[in-house]
Image (cartoon, rainbow, N blue to C red):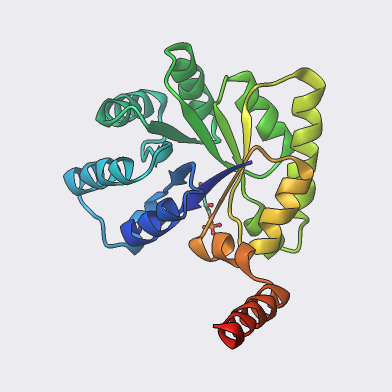
Length: 217
Ligand code: E4P
């Protein structure tokens, strides 16, 4: 399972990269705004800064909602760095743009996916990644993990190569549950990755080992 971090915060990206477990980064316009990154040139520079920290794919989302605009923006984003993945919304023009980029060999991430049908369309259009938003489904009392399972089942039925990128991860157990289901990738906040470290028996055991070592030295 690949681990992506879902942030535009450079310190957090460095932190995860330094752990040696990071495979990529996802961003979206809200995450960029949260870090105060505004203005076209600053946004593009920030994507390059992220690419220079992480060894792996960096999703950069288009703002246009028409296919011509998405293609124009996506081509400019892809030119920035060879790690850039063009992130496109799951709308009709997004599907068309996805097909355009996949035919050109440019990586894509189809985002804002909330149903198995949308995931089928993304795969048919040749998306590199499909991003089902499990946390946002959970937020409205719907089973987000079930969506990941359904997409896994459908993609396996047909051998679709699109990778399932479980997005909108809220906590550590989402990561573990997505791994059980067989999501190819998860993208979550740093806390969801660091939470995997935690077990009280690890802390108790380590404290005892260190105390016993001190007794004999
Ligand atoms: C990532 O690609 C998505 O944009 C992100 O995971 C959405 O997460 P949120 O639902 O916590 O905003």
